[in-house]
Image (tube, rainbow, N blue to C red):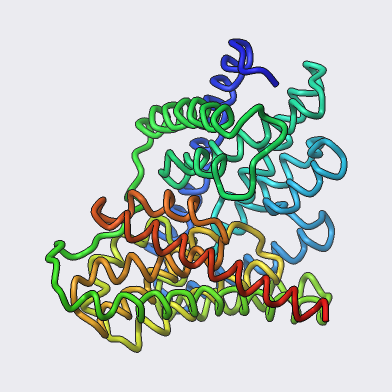
Length: 409
Protein backbone atom coordinates (compact mmCIF):
# COMPACT_ATOMS: atom_id res chain seq x y z
CA UNK A 1 0.00 0.00 0.00
CA UNK A 2 1.28 3.44 -0.87
CA UNK A 3 2.45 5.69 1.93
CA UNK A 4 -0.29 8.28 1.44
CA UNK A 5 -1.87 10.94 3.62
CA UNK A 6 -5.10 9.00 4.25
CA UNK A 7 -3.17 5.99 5.54
CA UNK A 8 -1.11 8.25 7.81
CA UNK A 9 -4.29 9.81 9.23
CA UNK A 10 -5.77 6.35 9.83
CA UNK A 11 -2.53 5.33 11.56
CA UNK A 12 -2.74 8.34 13.86
CA UNK A 13 -6.34 7.52 14.76
CA UNK A 14 -5.39 3.88 15.33
CA UNK A 15 -2.59 4.97 17.67
CA UNK A 16 -4.94 7.16 19.68
CA UNK A 17 -7.45 4.31 19.96
CA UNK A 18 -4.68 1.94 21.09
CA UNK A 19 -3.59 4.37 23.79
CA UNK A 20 -7.14 4.85 25.06
CA UNK A 21 -7.88 1.09 25.12
CA UNK A 22 -4.62 0.26 26.92
CA UNK A 23 -5.09 3.02 29.47
CA UNK A 24 -8.73 2.25 30.28
CA UNK A 25 -8.04 -1.48 30.50
CA UNK A 26 -5.08 -1.04 32.86
CA UNK A 27 -6.96 1.50 34.97
CA UNK A 28 -9.76 -1.06 35.43
CA UNK A 29 -7.29 -3.86 36.26
CA UNK A 30 -5.30 -1.75 38.71
CA UNK A 31 -8.50 -0.62 40.45
CA UNK A 32 -9.59 -4.25 40.91
CA UNK A 33 -6.13 -5.28 42.11
CA UNK A 34 -6.09 -2.43 44.65
CA UNK A 35 -9.54 -3.41 45.91
CA UNK A 36 -8.66 -7.11 46.15
CA UNK A 37 -5.14 -6.91 47.52
CA UNK A 38 -5.10 -3.65 49.50
CA UNK A 39 -8.56 -2.50 50.54
CA UNK A 40 -10.11 -5.85 51.51
CA UNK A 41 -7.03 -7.23 53.36
CA UNK A 42 -7.14 -4.19 55.65
CA UNK A 43 -10.40 -5.57 57.04
CA UNK A 44 -9.46 -9.26 56.87
CA UNK A 45 -6.52 -10.26 59.02
CA UNK A 46 -5.41 -13.59 57.59
CA UNK A 47 -2.01 -14.89 56.57
CA UNK A 48 -3.79 -17.27 54.23
CA UNK A 49 -5.53 -14.51 52.27
CA UNK A 50 -3.43 -15.06 49.07
CA UNK A 51 -4.42 -18.73 49.13
CA UNK A 52 -8.16 -17.96 49.37
CA UNK A 53 -7.93 -15.48 46.50
CA UNK A 54 -5.94 -17.96 44.39
CA UNK A 55 -8.44 -20.76 44.99
CA UNK A 56 -11.42 -18.47 44.37
CA UNK A 57 -9.82 -17.25 41.16
CA UNK A 58 -9.14 -20.86 40.15
CA UNK A 59 -12.81 -21.74 40.51
CA UNK A 60 -13.90 -18.71 38.48
CA UNK A 61 -11.33 -19.31 35.76
CA UNK A 62 -12.09 -23.03 35.60
CA UNK A 63 -15.83 -22.46 35.25
CA UNK A 64 -15.17 -19.74 32.67
CA UNK A 65 -12.92 -22.08 30.66
CA UNK A 66 -15.43 -24.93 30.90
CA UNK A 67 -18.65 -23.09 30.03
CA UNK A 68 -17.52 -20.01 28.06
CA UNK A 69 -14.28 -21.00 26.35
CA UNK A 70 -10.53 -20.44 26.28
CA UNK A 71 -10.29 -16.75 27.08
CA UNK A 72 -8.53 -14.40 26.94
CA UNK A 73 -7.09 -15.39 23.59
CA UNK A 74 -3.32 -15.34 23.39
CA UNK A 75 -1.40 -13.13 21.00
CA UNK A 76 -0.45 -16.21 18.97
CA UNK A 77 -4.07 -17.33 18.73
CA UNK A 78 -5.20 -13.88 17.64
CA UNK A 79 -2.60 -13.71 14.87
CA UNK A 80 -3.26 -17.31 13.81
CA UNK A 81 -7.00 -16.67 13.60
CA UNK A 82 -6.40 -13.66 11.40
CA UNK A 83 -3.99 -15.51 9.12
CA UNK A 84 -6.49 -18.35 8.72
CA UNK A 85 -9.71 -16.35 8.33
CA UNK A 86 -8.66 -12.80 7.50
CA UNK A 87 -10.43 -11.48 10.61
CA UNK A 88 -10.55 -11.60 14.41
CA UNK A 89 -13.87 -12.56 15.98
CA UNK A 90 -15.50 -9.66 17.82
CA UNK A 91 -19.18 -10.66 18.34
CA UNK A 92 -19.18 -11.28 22.09
CA UNK A 93 -15.45 -12.08 22.05
CA UNK A 94 -14.31 -8.62 23.17
CA UNK A 95 -16.43 -8.86 26.32
CA UNK A 96 -15.27 -12.43 27.00
CA UNK A 97 -11.60 -11.48 26.55
CA UNK A 98 -11.99 -8.50 28.87
CA UNK A 99 -13.88 -10.44 31.57
CA UNK A 100 -11.50 -13.41 31.62
CA UNK A 101 -8.42 -11.17 31.66
CA UNK A 102 -9.85 -9.12 34.51
CA UNK A 103 -10.28 -12.25 36.64
CA UNK A 104 -6.82 -13.61 35.76
CA UNK A 105 -4.97 -10.37 36.46
CA UNK A 106 -6.97 -9.41 39.55
CA UNK A 107 -6.46 -12.77 41.26
CA UNK A 108 -2.68 -12.53 41.13
CA UNK A 109 -1.65 -14.62 38.12
CA UNK A 110 1.99 -14.22 37.14
CA UNK A 111 0.97 -13.00 33.69
CA UNK A 112 0.76 -9.71 31.82
CA UNK A 113 -2.07 -7.85 30.07
CA UNK A 114 -0.65 -7.84 26.54
CA UNK A 115 -2.44 -10.99 25.33
CA UNK A 116 -5.89 -9.72 26.28
CA UNK A 117 -5.19 -6.24 24.92
CA UNK A 118 -4.06 -7.58 21.54
CA UNK A 119 -7.11 -9.85 21.23
CA UNK A 120 -9.45 -6.97 22.15
CA UNK A 121 -7.64 -4.67 19.70
CA UNK A 122 -7.80 -7.27 16.92
CA UNK A 123 -11.56 -7.64 17.36
CA UNK A 124 -12.10 -3.88 17.30
CA UNK A 125 -9.94 -3.42 14.18
CA UNK A 126 -11.92 -6.15 12.41
CA UNK A 127 -15.19 -4.51 13.51
CA UNK A 128 -14.11 -1.13 12.12
CA UNK A 129 -12.75 -2.77 8.97
CA UNK A 130 -16.07 -4.49 8.30
CA UNK A 131 -17.94 -1.22 8.50
CA UNK A 132 -15.45 0.62 6.31
CA UNK A 133 -15.27 -2.27 3.81
CA UNK A 134 -11.52 -2.58 4.23
CA UNK A 135 -9.70 -5.28 2.31
CA UNK A 136 -8.10 -8.17 4.21
CA UNK A 137 -4.71 -6.68 3.32
CA UNK A 138 -5.54 -3.35 4.93
CA UNK A 139 -6.99 -5.04 8.04
CA UNK A 140 -3.81 -7.05 8.43
CA UNK A 141 -1.65 -3.95 8.06
CA UNK A 142 -3.62 -2.13 10.72
CA UNK A 143 -3.57 -5.15 13.02
CA UNK A 144 0.23 -5.30 12.79
CA UNK A 145 0.56 -1.57 13.39
CA UNK A 146 -1.88 -1.76 16.30
CA UNK A 147 -0.04 -4.65 17.97
CA UNK A 148 3.29 -2.83 17.65
CA UNK A 149 1.80 0.34 19.14
CA UNK A 150 0.09 -1.61 21.91
CA UNK A 151 3.31 -3.35 22.97
CA UNK A 152 5.24 -0.07 22.84
CA UNK A 153 2.58 1.64 24.94
CA UNK A 154 2.21 -0.90 27.76
CA UNK A 155 5.95 -1.63 27.98
CA UNK A 156 6.95 2.05 27.86
CA UNK A 157 9.25 1.11 24.98
CA UNK A 158 8.50 3.46 22.06
CA UNK A 159 10.88 1.74 19.62
CA UNK A 160 9.48 -1.78 19.95
CA UNK A 161 7.22 -1.41 16.93
CA UNK A 162 10.00 0.09 14.83
CA UNK A 163 12.33 -2.71 15.90
CA UNK A 164 9.75 -5.28 14.85
CA UNK A 165 9.64 -3.60 11.45
CA UNK A 166 13.39 -3.92 10.90
CA UNK A 167 13.85 -7.26 12.68
CA UNK A 168 16.23 -9.44 10.71
CA UNK A 169 14.45 -11.87 8.40
CA UNK A 170 10.90 -10.52 8.83
CA UNK A 171 10.66 -8.02 6.00
CA UNK A 172 6.97 -7.74 5.17
CA UNK A 173 5.92 -7.81 1.54
CA UNK A 174 2.65 -6.10 2.38
CA UNK A 175 4.53 -2.83 2.91
CA UNK A 176 6.62 -1.24 0.19
CA UNK A 177 9.72 -1.31 2.38
CA UNK A 178 10.94 -1.77 5.91
CA UNK A 179 11.46 1.99 6.10
CA UNK A 180 7.82 2.67 5.25
CA UNK A 181 6.69 0.15 7.82
CA UNK A 182 9.02 1.64 10.45
CA UNK A 183 7.68 5.14 9.78
CA UNK A 184 4.09 3.96 10.11
CA UNK A 185 4.97 2.16 13.34
CA UNK A 186 6.60 5.35 14.65
CA UNK A 187 3.54 7.46 13.85
CA UNK A 188 1.08 4.97 15.35
CA UNK A 189 3.21 4.44 18.44
CA UNK A 190 3.70 8.17 19.07
CA UNK A 191 -0.06 8.73 18.99
CA UNK A 192 -0.66 5.68 21.20
CA UNK A 193 1.81 6.79 23.87
CA UNK A 194 0.41 10.33 23.76
CA UNK A 195 -3.16 9.17 24.39
CA UNK A 196 -2.00 6.65 27.01
CA UNK A 197 0.01 9.28 28.90
CA UNK A 198 -2.74 11.89 28.85
CA UNK A 199 -5.36 9.46 30.17
CA UNK A 200 -3.02 8.17 32.85
CA UNK A 201 -2.70 11.69 34.21
CA UNK A 202 -6.28 11.26 35.45
CA UNK A 203 -5.32 8.14 37.44
CA UNK A 204 -1.57 8.30 38.22
CA UNK A 205 0.20 4.95 38.26
CA UNK A 206 1.75 3.89 41.55
CA UNK A 207 5.07 2.98 39.98
CA UNK A 208 6.94 3.04 36.71
CA UNK A 209 8.10 -0.05 34.85
CA UNK A 210 11.84 0.20 35.34
CA UNK A 211 14.90 -1.38 36.91
CA UNK A 212 17.04 0.41 39.48
CA UNK A 213 20.69 -0.54 39.03
CA UNK A 214 23.59 0.44 41.28
CA UNK A 215 25.51 3.57 40.35
CA UNK A 216 27.65 2.82 37.32
CA UNK A 217 31.26 2.45 38.43
CA UNK A 218 33.22 0.74 35.70
CA UNK A 219 35.74 -1.88 36.81
CA UNK A 220 38.16 -3.89 34.72
CA UNK A 221 37.22 -7.11 36.48
CA UNK A 222 33.73 -7.03 34.97
CA UNK A 223 35.19 -8.06 31.61
CA UNK A 224 36.08 -11.47 33.06
CA UNK A 225 32.49 -12.10 34.11
CA UNK A 226 30.54 -10.85 31.10
CA UNK A 227 30.56 -14.20 29.32
CA UNK A 228 29.59 -16.19 32.44
CA UNK A 229 26.69 -13.74 32.92
CA UNK A 230 25.63 -14.17 29.29
CA UNK A 231 25.81 -17.96 29.53
CA UNK A 232 23.82 -18.03 32.78
CA UNK A 233 21.21 -15.70 31.27
CA UNK A 234 20.88 -17.80 28.11
CA UNK A 235 20.58 -21.00 30.14
CA UNK A 236 17.86 -19.42 32.26
CA UNK A 237 15.96 -18.37 29.13
CA UNK A 238 16.16 -21.95 27.86
CA UNK A 239 14.90 -23.18 31.23
CA UNK A 240 11.95 -20.75 31.02
CA UNK A 241 10.99 -22.28 27.67
CA UNK A 242 11.51 -25.80 29.03
CA UNK A 243 9.11 -25.05 31.89
CA UNK A 244 6.56 -24.01 29.26
CA UNK A 245 6.86 -27.28 27.36
CA UNK A 246 6.63 -29.25 30.61
CA UNK A 247 3.50 -27.49 31.88
CA UNK A 248 1.87 -27.72 28.45
CA UNK A 249 2.49 -31.48 28.49
CA UNK A 250 0.94 -31.83 31.94
CA UNK A 251 -2.12 -29.82 30.87
CA UNK A 252 -2.61 -31.99 27.76
CA UNK A 253 -2.53 -35.16 29.86
CA UNK A 254 -4.98 -33.78 32.41
CA UNK A 255 -7.80 -32.25 30.34
CA UNK A 256 -9.93 -30.87 33.17
CA UNK A 257 -10.26 -27.06 32.94
CA UNK A 258 -11.66 -26.71 36.45
CA UNK A 259 -9.09 -29.00 38.06
CA UNK A 260 -6.18 -27.35 36.25
CA UNK A 261 -7.35 -23.82 37.05
CA UNK A 262 -7.85 -24.61 40.75
CA UNK A 263 -4.42 -26.28 40.89
CA UNK A 264 -2.85 -23.14 39.43
CA UNK A 265 -4.83 -21.00 41.88
CA UNK A 266 -3.57 -23.10 44.79
CA UNK A 267 0.03 -22.60 43.64
CA UNK A 268 -0.52 -18.86 43.12
CA UNK A 269 -1.73 -18.65 46.72
CA UNK A 270 1.13 -20.69 48.15
CA UNK A 271 3.80 -18.84 46.17
CA UNK A 272 2.17 -15.50 47.01
CA UNK A 273 2.18 -16.34 50.72
CA UNK A 274 5.93 -16.96 50.49
CA UNK A 275 6.68 -13.70 48.66
CA UNK A 276 4.45 -11.10 46.99
CA UNK A 277 7.00 -10.90 44.15
CA UNK A 278 5.54 -14.12 42.76
CA UNK A 279 2.16 -12.45 42.25
CA UNK A 280 1.14 -10.46 39.17
CA UNK A 281 3.17 -9.80 36.04
CA UNK A 282 5.99 -7.94 37.81
CA UNK A 283 5.33 -4.65 36.02
CA UNK A 284 4.75 -2.65 39.21
CA UNK A 285 6.99 -4.74 41.46
CA UNK A 286 10.21 -4.81 39.46
CA UNK A 287 11.37 -1.30 40.41
CA UNK A 288 10.97 -1.89 44.16
CA UNK A 289 12.53 -5.34 43.83
CA UNK A 290 15.59 -4.05 41.96
CA UNK A 291 16.27 -1.48 44.72
CA UNK A 292 16.64 -4.20 47.34
CA UNK A 293 17.77 -7.16 45.23
CA UNK A 294 21.48 -6.92 46.08
CA UNK A 295 20.57 -7.07 49.77
CA UNK A 296 18.88 -10.45 49.26
CA UNK A 297 20.65 -13.79 49.54
CA UNK A 298 21.85 -15.63 46.45
CA UNK A 299 19.56 -18.56 47.25
CA UNK A 300 16.49 -16.32 47.50
CA UNK A 301 17.23 -14.65 44.14
CA UNK A 302 17.70 -17.99 42.39
CA UNK A 303 14.55 -19.46 43.91
CA UNK A 304 12.59 -16.31 43.03
CA UNK A 305 13.75 -16.48 39.41
CA UNK A 306 12.99 -20.18 39.07
CA UNK A 307 9.69 -19.94 40.96
CA UNK A 308 8.48 -16.95 38.96
CA UNK A 309 9.35 -18.66 35.67
CA UNK A 310 7.66 -21.91 36.71
CA UNK A 311 4.54 -20.22 38.11
CA UNK A 312 4.17 -18.10 34.96
CA UNK A 313 4.12 -21.19 32.76
CA UNK A 314 1.83 -23.08 35.14
CA UNK A 315 -0.67 -20.20 35.07
CA UNK A 316 -0.56 -20.00 31.28
CA UNK A 317 -0.82 -23.73 30.63
CA UNK A 318 -3.48 -24.37 33.28
CA UNK A 319 -6.02 -21.90 31.94
CA UNK A 320 -4.95 -18.64 33.58
CA UNK A 321 -4.19 -17.15 30.20
CA UNK A 322 -2.20 -13.96 29.62
CA UNK A 323 1.11 -12.55 28.46
CA UNK A 324 4.52 -13.92 29.46
CA UNK A 325 6.74 -10.97 28.54
CA UNK A 326 6.52 -8.99 31.81
CA UNK A 327 7.10 -12.08 34.00
CA UNK A 328 9.96 -13.19 31.73
CA UNK A 329 11.68 -9.83 32.23
CA UNK A 330 11.10 -9.96 35.99
CA UNK A 331 12.40 -13.50 36.45
CA UNK A 332 15.36 -12.79 34.16
CA UNK A 333 16.14 -9.73 36.27
CA UNK A 334 16.12 -11.88 39.41
CA UNK A 335 18.64 -14.28 37.88
CA UNK A 336 20.66 -11.27 36.69
CA UNK A 337 20.89 -9.95 40.24
CA UNK A 338 21.90 -13.42 41.38
CA UNK A 339 24.82 -13.19 38.95
CA UNK A 340 25.67 -9.70 40.25
CA UNK A 341 25.63 -11.02 43.82
CA UNK A 342 28.04 -13.75 42.81
CA UNK A 343 30.34 -11.44 40.81
CA UNK A 344 30.06 -7.93 42.34
CA UNK A 345 31.87 -5.99 39.61
CA UNK A 346 29.89 -3.27 37.81
CA UNK A 347 26.78 -5.22 38.88
CA UNK A 348 24.36 -3.19 36.75
CA UNK A 349 26.11 -4.29 33.56
CA UNK A 350 26.12 -7.94 34.59
CA UNK A 351 22.39 -7.75 35.29
CA UNK A 352 21.78 -6.07 31.93
CA UNK A 353 23.64 -8.66 29.82
CA UNK A 354 22.10 -11.59 31.72
CA UNK A 355 18.59 -10.19 31.18
CA UNK A 356 19.35 -9.47 27.50
CA UNK A 357 20.58 -13.04 26.93
CA UNK A 358 17.63 -14.61 28.72
CA UNK A 359 14.94 -12.50 27.05
CA UNK A 360 16.48 -13.00 23.60
CA UNK A 361 16.28 -16.78 24.05
CA UNK A 362 12.65 -16.46 25.16
CA UNK A 363 11.48 -13.90 22.57
CA UNK A 364 13.90 -14.87 19.76
CA UNK A 365 13.91 -11.25 18.51
CA UNK A 366 17.16 -9.38 19.31
CA UNK A 367 16.03 -5.89 18.25
CA UNK A 368 12.70 -6.17 20.04
CA UNK A 369 14.48 -7.43 23.16
CA UNK A 370 17.00 -4.59 23.02
CA UNK A 371 14.36 -1.90 22.66
CA UNK A 372 12.29 -3.41 25.48
CA UNK A 373 15.34 -3.09 27.72
CA UNK A 374 16.52 0.28 26.38
CA UNK A 375 14.89 2.40 29.08
CA UNK A 376 15.12 -0.20 31.85
CA UNK A 377 18.90 0.15 32.18
CA UNK A 378 21.38 3.04 32.02
CA UNK A 379 21.86 4.17 28.43
CA UNK A 380 25.58 3.36 28.48
CA UNK A 381 24.67 -0.32 28.84
CA UNK A 382 22.62 -0.37 25.63
CA UNK A 383 25.52 -1.24 23.23
CA UNK A 384 26.28 -4.28 25.40
CA UNK A 385 22.59 -5.26 25.48
CA UNK A 386 22.29 -5.02 21.69
CA UNK A 387 25.51 -6.95 21.05
CA UNK A 388 24.49 -9.71 23.46
CA UNK A 389 21.02 -9.98 21.89
CA UNK A 390 22.53 -10.26 18.39
CA UNK A 391 25.11 -12.79 19.59
CA UNK A 392 22.46 -14.99 21.21
CA UNK A 393 20.33 -14.82 18.07
CA UNK A 394 23.22 -16.01 15.91
CA UNK A 395 23.92 -18.87 18.32
CA UNK A 396 20.24 -19.88 18.25
CA UNK A 397 20.26 -19.85 14.43
CA UNK A 398 23.34 -22.08 14.37
CA UNK A 399 21.80 -24.50 16.85
CA UNK A 400 18.56 -24.63 14.85
CA UNK A 401 20.57 -25.15 11.66
CA UNK A 402 22.47 -28.07 13.16
CA UNK A 403 19.20 -29.51 14.45
CA UNK A 404 17.67 -29.31 10.99
CA UNK A 405 20.73 -31.03 9.49
CA UNK A 406 20.50 -33.89 11.98
CA UNK A 407 16.76 -34.29 11.34
CA UNK A 408 17.30 -34.43 7.57
CA UNK A 409 19.71 -37.31 8.01
